[in-house]
Length: 108
Image (cartoon, rainbow, N blue to C red):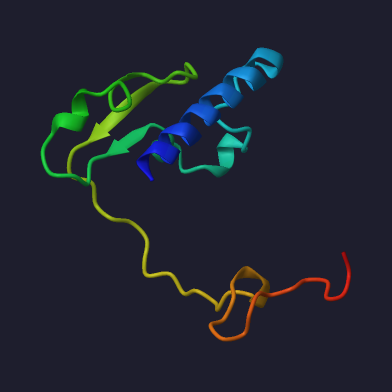
């Protein structure tokens, strides 16, 4: 499993490099910044034991997009509430004993 994960990570890196050679940087996304929770665009929230992650380039120093600096949050507070989720649509999963969900039965 880890070997395939490494392969997929390398595929993503190669694809990103190829796309950026044509279109320029693709990250951060083109989602409108005014609709984001701005602090979350730069904060590394450490929910792990220890402080080692504070030393990583992903937790402090300048953001690669040049819009500011990473911010390390050593003891973040969880935000939000318990989500209320609707059951998934039938096409999003199979129910045990029913076989696969077929979108267009009889059509190829």
